[in-house]
Image (cartoon, rainbow, N blue to C red; front, side):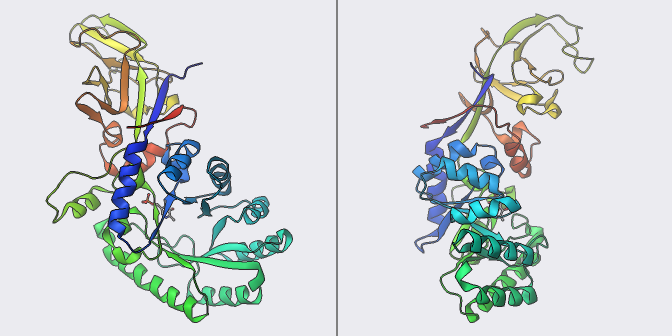
Length: 385
Ligand SMILES: *Cc1c(COP(=O)(O)O)cnc(C)c1O
């Protein structure tokens, strides 16, 4: 059976994005952890992980144990997996047994890990999460002191593999002072762990925006999310990166494309309404095409009368409301459009391109949300270029 649309991922563009980040990081041996939460930002964990491994990535960050499970079963078995968020209480034994590391941000989780580590007979590999100012998860200074003694008393059951924290909006210039405080606090936590005698733990603080804007946050590893998929975390970060460089062209390449095909073509006379209700009236004789992709496939209803797609290398508007399984586009004046013709929802066709941002709200900020809402059921395939 064929799906009504298909997502393609470009191997060459992914390679280019990693090459760009590696060049930024320089020769200091800073590790890249590929962040694949949210179904690899909508790209699909099962297809993305092997692609990233082929590009030399051997560390993956996920949000929860179910995502860790999917990475574990789609990778080559040699990569490290790190859980940054939720672990169900009945999943700790699996996580510890598979030597998957995880963030520790509460005493409850630490005790749970201890219990399970004893049962499994292997140490729990933990990253101590410091509260530096995001105020979501993490130990503050006094809690960290307690935690350190608890770990020392049970040292055979814990392996402190990391010290981490997360920044509260490194992509926005307005957050500069808050981020500065966080960077200072993180240093103090690092000192605390060193003084407590911990060695060889991996310090990681930076997300995409921070690794560009604040080189001092790169430490031993960066958690690379949105940029590996070819998007800037915000327009500000791109502008700042361009700053004093002569080339104003983005070195990042979108790796995702989303394509469907024409299902039907028909003529509509002046004065007729198109689709449900009265949201669109033909002001002249028109030719319209229907594509078999609607809001159930992740093409937002809010794109009714707004979205743009590519047919025969031309940019065409959505007319009328987006339906559950179909969307109507205006192909008046484009010669020879027929059922089966390729329609690009995201990506290139001829000289034209629809980026994720322009498919959505005309704002880079929402790339994160738009991508992660691409349904898992759309088939994905790797393409070389
Ligand atoms: C999502 C996430 C990242 C990656 O953020 P990007 O801006 O996509 O690079 C890094 N760290 C944590 C804790 C995250 O949740």
